[in-house]
Length: 212
Length: 190
Image 1: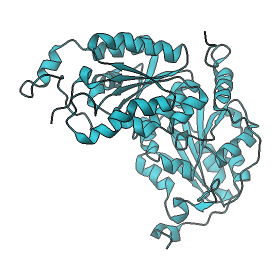
Image 2: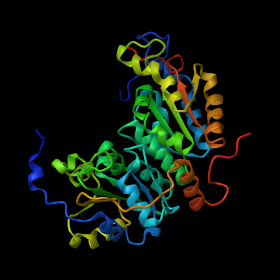
Image 3: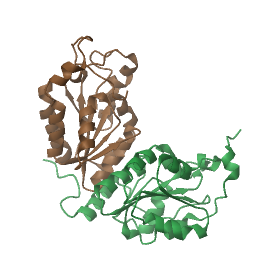
Image 4: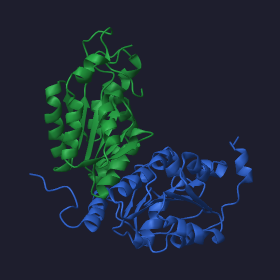
């Protein structure tokens, strides 16, 4: 028997297409330093930025995106940092919402693209399809600015929230089950690190020095 | 596990923390060494063995003191700090090492510099049998994920070992764990 919480029957349906909603929410992506989780959100952002050097997209280390974004936000207080993660990726280390909330860096925003499924592994339902509400978990953690996007009418205000500068913001984007944008990206974690650091910090700071 | 009081190895239960407080603090010297090397991000799940470093980072306006809910967050956090050009250290107990293993894929695959100080349990003189499985596995599992382990057993070895680790991590770009053994920090008394 499938587990199901009371909240699942009360939740609005998943309507939006991520391929339109993610770009609409982020807008000018060059304004952000971006860290993504693996799978769907990595593809969303690789396509949006054309695998840009201001985005660090993962293909493993599941559960690390929000913490990685926090580290980047603390290190770069003058830059706006955007974490783009999925429901499954965030659920794996949902405690990171608490870690972030108590520090509340004002230059950090989290966009959770919630499709209610583990899209990379056979499309099994995730906890959020069964009633778990990540926006409420973020609120419970103490994140002060939270928006939930269910329809196109919610996008404009949430897009502004991602760019606000007074507190850490959390936007839950609920999308229907369906493929992310397609883009062939560099899958080398080391090459992407050097690319990111080189673009942000300049020449000579981009990686491990030659050995010997 | 949080903020447990330790006494030095070999001292009796009858003469507890006061004895420790009178000895010069290598922990304070260690904090100063880390800061001198540009470390600004201090991430931790609290442990008695790291009490001084945690308190110093909380009181330091030039540092970020990041309380984690699980140690693997610290691995990802420090990688993010590196992307932004900052240096950090993960402070954890040996039990926390087990929580980090898959996240170390990021460090190994991404060739991120990574420094952690591990206060050991399940080691010399341990009185809690629950601490042994992870304590004894710390070095093999870290090494399996490409993290070089440096063990410290004596007070006079602390600063030279951490200085060596700082060079290995932030100059050569490797991942290093300094294991602060129970010979150094004492076994918790039960």
